[in-house]
Length: 178
Length: 385
Image (cartoon, rainbow over all chains, first blue to last red; front, side, top):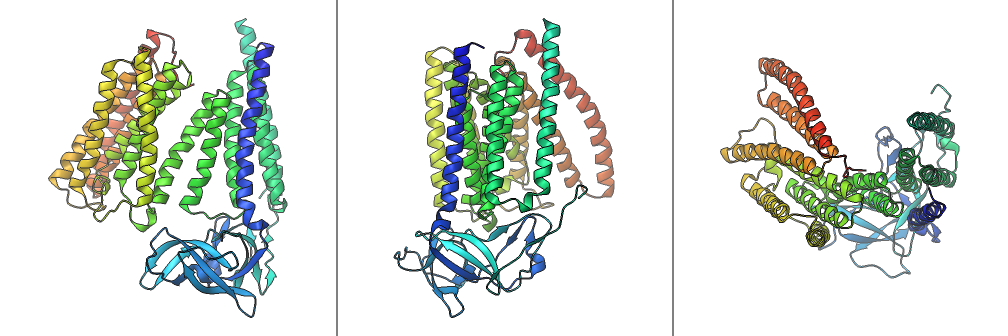
């Protein structure tokens, strides 16, 4: 291949890597935004059978605020803002919900309506899964979840808590034959 | 000279196997300690692997190892996709349909752009494979697949729209003498065959427009968005190709006629609107439509073979044959289900087995004859690479 052409090939490679790494970088920033926020809340989870929790490499977490009283006019797929109020134990609980975005001073989390049934609706906040490696063991009873919230109300999981302390995930030691 | 080429190819294969073994060894060591590796380091490992694969691909290419270079660019594209999913896992993003559709969107757009920058057909094929998954998943997400508000008809329309878009891109690239025209031609044929295959299922016809189905605003906007892109690209492509005399008026008329027929066919699905279920009574209208769709499927397969032969593309001919084989297997399973019962199953198994053995032999003979005929005409200028 001619030298000029080789030079062009490497220029193209640099450009392609800039595009690909740019998208990866932008995605990393997007998913990190809530974690850069100083707003941290602890959310209560609904009691679930820990034996049914593990689905492959993640657990599905059901939140107390996952099922809330229905808002007039709310439909499946709508964005809702759930205002939270901290109780005496430091756990943030449902105060009320709105289709309008609350002011920045309020403590709120943003979710999507998944279903509406009679006077309750189920809402997902994008934090219903917690990933870990295979062969992990953890005690999911009385679990709470520490979550960071961005100004827009989007949430990211920081860690799982049990009685206010981080849950220790035990991994089975792998061997060359495992 | 030939001997030298053979040696260099053999050496390249050995070197590739060696590099794959090294990569596997490193991957195995990483996998053993994966749980204890910090998340940031995991992401860094995959990003470095992606960059290395792309760089190695170009290094091989500039050294005239085109095929190995292409393989490494494919590896780079796949590692880039994995990086996106690993980042999502690291940040515990939801596993919802919309979340996965968003990740696939990032993946195919990145690979698509890289394939144009690097002028890599292999990379474009990966992007278009991911696009197929994305466009389907995005509809499932918008249409709330699990809430029951789902119509196969919309999915069929989406595949039709994408097929039109692919045809437009084929014509744009053909008018520019760009090598990607072969890739887009292959995918045009793929979407038309896929759409007709979807329509050939008796159980899916009542679900084209199920009773009580309502088009949500999300789905409508999505449909309009992709339709505008597809129509604009096909209009531009057709006019460019016609101006440069690279497209015949007859082919355009055939394309428009095919398009109108599919729109009519998908629309007529509302006449057999119902719900899914095996072993139900089949109405005359449903049976007629199913028979028509299956005859159409055979005609489309034959047309695609003609299309592949016209453009001297053995890969398109192979694709049509693959769908024909898929059709035989699918209908056979369908007949076994319809003629239920143990005796019926045994008779259908024996008959089907005999048909498949002789059919398989016949199809293979047919395929070889078509391929050799296609190659005889001229050396392939148009291929998917």
